[in-house]
Every structure is written in C-alpha cells, then in structure tokens.
Image (cartoon, rainbow, N blue to C red; front, top):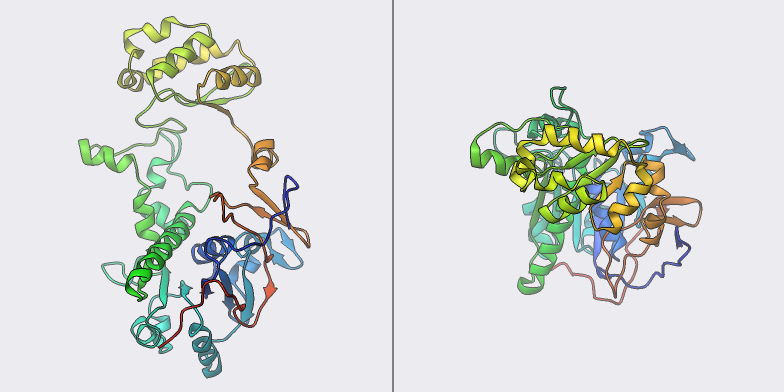
Length: 390
C-alpha cells in the first residue's frame, strides 16, 4: 500500500490495535465512523444485508459495478453478509458480538429491538460492549425515531438558511457536512466510551444524531443570535463577523482573503499599494471593517484589479497574510501539498481514496484493506486482548 507521494504505509499496530468493531451501518455517517476507527488500527468487520449497502448503487461513476460513493467510506474493513431477519443471521451476530468491543449501527430506531437485539438485552449479555448508534433525531422527543437525511437536516437545522448569496435562495452545502460530522461525533463518542471503560470495566450506549450534529455546526451564527437576537442572514462567501474574509476579483482569477486582525490588514494594504486604507477610521479595527464591508470590498477590488492572482498570492502568503486560490476539486486533490500530507491514498488493485487527516507520531493511520475485502471473523490479535462476554 502506498500514499500518493510514493511513501509506503506500514501495516504496524495503530492506536486502536486490538479493538474489535462490528460495523452494521450503511450509507454515510456510520460507515465513515467505522472507516476512521479502521484507519487507526481497529479490526473492523462490516456486516451488510444480502443485497449490500445501498450506496453501492449511488453512482455514476462505478468501478466493477460498485459506485465510487461506497468506495469512499469502506476502507480498512472486512466484509460479510448476514440477514438479521433470519434466526441464523441473528445467531451469527451474537457470536460476533461476543468477540466485539464496539458495535456501530444506524438502523431505524426500533429495528434492533424488534429483532430482540435491543441495547438492554445486549448490555446484560455483553457488559463491556460499547454500542454506538447513528440516528436521525434520537430515540425520543417530538421528532424521536424519525429517519433523518443530511439535506433535510441541513434545511431544518438552519444551515441552509445561512448558506448562499446575500439576497438569494437558501442553499444546501455542496457536501454531506451533517452526515460527515455525525460520523466524526460517533468516533469521538466511541473513543470517550473506550477511555471510560478502562476505569469502570463497563461499556455504554453512545448516540450521535444527525439533528444534534447539524445544530452543533451553527457557530458563530448561534452565538450571534444568543447575543443580539437578530436572525442570521446569508452573506455569500463573506464571514458574518470578520472582514475582509471573502472572495475578491483580481485581474486574472478570484482569490480568498481571510484577514483576521489589524496587523494582517495593515500588511495586506501595504502589499497592494493602498496603505491609506489601514489608517482610514472606517477600517482601523475589526469591528469597523465588518460594519463597512461594502465600501471596503469596493476599495480592495479596485486595487486588486492591477494584480495577477498567482503572483499576489505568493506575495501575501510570504508576508503571512492568509490568502488562497479558489481551486476545483481536481486541482485540490493533485496539489503538491495534498500529496505531501498523504491526503490521497493508493492501494493495490487500483483503489484511491482520501487519507486520514489526523496524524499521530508513533501510531499513524494505516491502510490495510481496500473496500470489499472479505472476512468471516475477527482477526486474531495479541495486542491488547479483546473484551470477553460474561
């Protein structure tokens, strides 16, 4: 296995080596959680229904009849198929749970209970088991047990209301941000429960709900609303609290400026040959720049019209002014720094995927199983011993 920059990724024990994860989830949030745990050394056994995870059909593009969407979420897992509607499937699940430390599932609330496999039942039989449920709205409350979907939660949580051009329609964020942050929250919950289990010897129920995760993303809009009670509005690419924090036209291509303090603003004005802007009373501090953002944007774009974007970006970055090009996905994935950071991974058989963003010095992420690797049981491992059912 190699990363995109050609470095071999050794399959040594990761930080979660010896942790056994049974991933019953499908679609995005749960599988993303399972992939992250697997990247960091957990032995992840993914169980799919006989027809497979729904995302196998979510294309094009397809490779060998399986959609790219599926490949992006199911690395570092071994796979088998079980039908939990059958007695044999449920019996096999119990055998696997006897070996597992963590269960990840995102069935509709009540499904596991209907199969006689609810949390109370499993916790009594497997007291060290950590059960992680990814759900739409949680199990109770006004919307409890209802199914949840990323775009619907973006709409309902307020995310869409602050995304889009000023005066334009509300827009869905162009990636499944709610699903993905729910997967990350599930990972955090599992790690917290594993840490606590070292003290108590007991597992617990962990829940990551899409609705909660969507609401949690509302900073700084929620903080603003809590403070002044004004309903946040769409501001396009501009930050609601900071300016200049926006895209700007140049003579060639647009660039993004993320100027967060007075020093950076002064350096920006000097680099573009408009030092007087920094001493203008309207723009002398962060609050003034934010209030007078309309006039400031006009003044900056008038100055930037004389500059080539690539050359100016180099000068600004050299002067420690945060600035960036606006890249397409292909340009971002082939950028030299993306390669250097190991953020594109290549594995045998032609698999390519995104690398793990968290870097550990002694126990880095490893890439051991491409999606669709088969497995019938957990792999034997001496480090540390798997939890035992009592």
